[in-house]
Length: 172
Image (cartoon, rainbow, N blue to C red; front, side, top):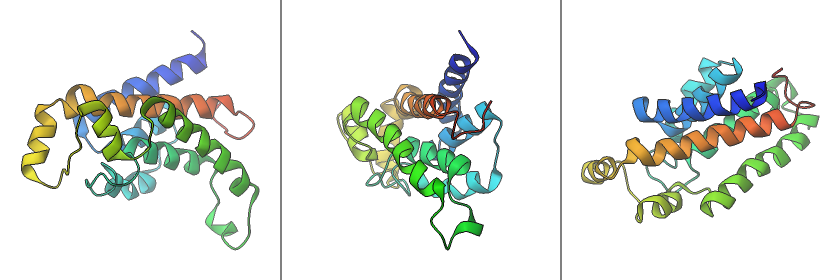
């Protein structure tokens, strides 16, 4: 196993571990990637709090794993604030990279939407702001063997994509 394979495996394992222990799918994906690549950024981590479970625990938006992977890619190659008034080369480079992550989700789950991924892996979706639905989610393995696997895959896919493009990412 080469160094790149080790980092993909580490991202997967940390994603599974963090989601199982701490919950907050976007933050868990982001933390797994930041820790794997030694690119910690506490401001981005904090800002990602509300992106859990399809944003705000509601489920109707993008999967937190997808959001976390997207945030990490943006952390590494996104447009800087100093370049806000002009289109930088990062703007044209980042979108095809994000599409690669999108395509991984589509291939695996047929969607990037949290509620639809839940339907695929649980047979139904949940509104986690409701206490009873949150209890059912947990009883059905939400943070045992369901969402931790999604987050592990999201972190691994993102790591694989980052490592595939050394010309864009300074992670070596």
